[in-house]
Image (cartoon, rainbow, N blue to C red; front, side):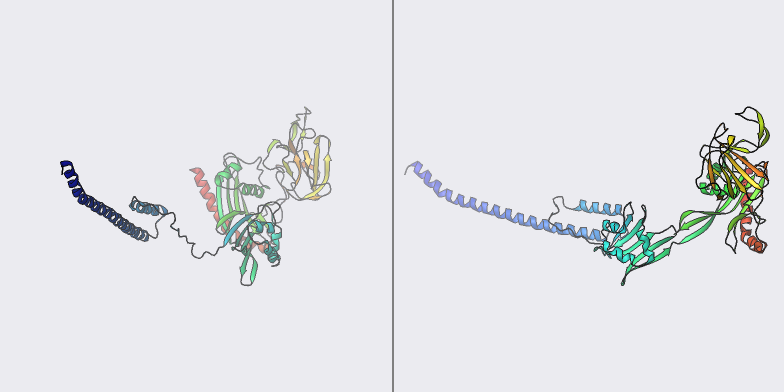
Length: 472
């Protein structure tokens, strides 16, 4: 046996055991790897289960009154505690729940638009329009639903089947329609809002104008106009107002369901003009129900004539026996008062009467003449136009608009020329004493004093406070 043959034989004899050894190590390695995977999987599931328990415990221990920010903070910390290699499965179902007591009811706030009817409104809100007939059959209370106007608002409630469960419609600021569905079907009822009347007061001092002072005091423009109308028979707000004049107003405020709806009437007021005090107290006759404003002595503030036929205008020329005419360039008497105002400013009848002339009259231009009983008459000249509702021969009420300021006839600019005559004789409208209307009847004097005593006392206190503030 040569050397090469011996070596090869020895090699073959030794290589066989080594081959089995390597195979065993390979099998052992594979087994270890498989065992490691199994152990790793078991460990991961245990860790995930542990984390889920931690998450569940943390969620269950969240405070019941925690706000959204606190909850978000807690959830953020929980998320950070999850294993880094954990990814939520998209196949995991998400549990959702509806609020307790939910019955699928829907609330509709419907605003009426031009051309809308109740049927079309129901259709737009997914309410069965076949129920409109059922509504109308409920009686006169629901017939107002057939006369809807653009801007009206209806509140309706329905279920998933489109069945009307409730409806509310504002008929007026004070009244509404309520429709409810019960076991026997729909029922309708007219209800009134919870209306409350409260008393408020303001005081002010005039430094520039009545409107500016009343606005600074918190008085609305409507109440300012009412204040001027109340004292309009005694005070010419175009000429008589002076800086330092004071006013105090006690008025009503109307509240609906606890919220202010609007201002009511003035129930008591005082106006101090040039140091002279004028007071007005609202009183309703218990027999006739007629309401007016009276002085503390029971005299009516309403005179037979207004002091000025144009509101808040400026006097450009007064009553005079000698005045230079700007167009005729000569001295002549001016038997009236000129009120400068913008073209188109309404002109009011200063008293109840009958129109005896309406048309053009020489230098007067377009003019209206009103006769008040047997003794008095008034003339309104240089009008730009007449009010169509105040025609020749018709009766007019005090304050009714009869025409509009203009510059017709011999006029240098737009203004109203106003004349006042007693038995045909011209009198100065600014100084003539007007007749008063009837005072409080004697049989109602005690009731008047009892009703207005508290307001007089309140005016006394408010007036003293205003005077004290001005002196400071």
